[in-house]
Length: 284
Image (tube, rainbow, N blue to C red; front, top):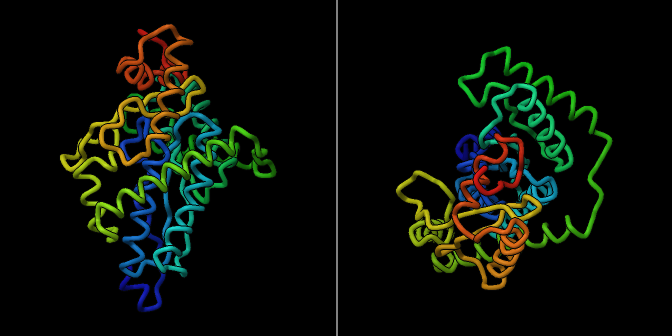
């Protein structure tokens, strides 16, 4: 892509944003996208689309999309790349889908609302067949048609600013900055060397990733509002202040649900949406 850009042909580069697509904290997927962008720009890429997979909580998802575009542009300029055109892509729900087709279509419509509120440039649509096999062309067409209908309905609307939204934007930006700083430190200022060391040490760690190059020490879970937080941090490059915020949010949920702060929360959350809930209940 860089070679073609040098010869007057601009091609869009789109790294895969959602990662494992299951309870991925926004700051982790956003940090990976930012690093992908910097590495691509180093090779001459001038047009890049950074992606994000729906997490489930509308406030957190909109905050993630807004910060993704803002911080990608910020870090590209910080590294000296001022001529890279950045766009975003939102992936509809990547986790377990309900088997009922009406419920699955409702989830697709909900995702389309989030994408519109988050001002995503592009959206990857899903189908009502996600839970039980390869979708037919007809199912793909229906998912696309439903998504387009919702985005057309929503196009004149926007999510109003709120204390909750701003708090989530600030937290995601703080977390991304923390991960980027730790990665650059690991590479002694070299982002390419840093990201290799970051994954090797678990400074950046993707939940449930099958890659042998991923340390796999972290565990995410939802707070009471359904926002994705981190239960086990492993060696993640977060400050102690960030860890305390996550821990407090999950302790609130444990107290409200009268349960232990444990891996069972994670298991319940993985299956929750396919059962019609965002936050898992014990033994669900």
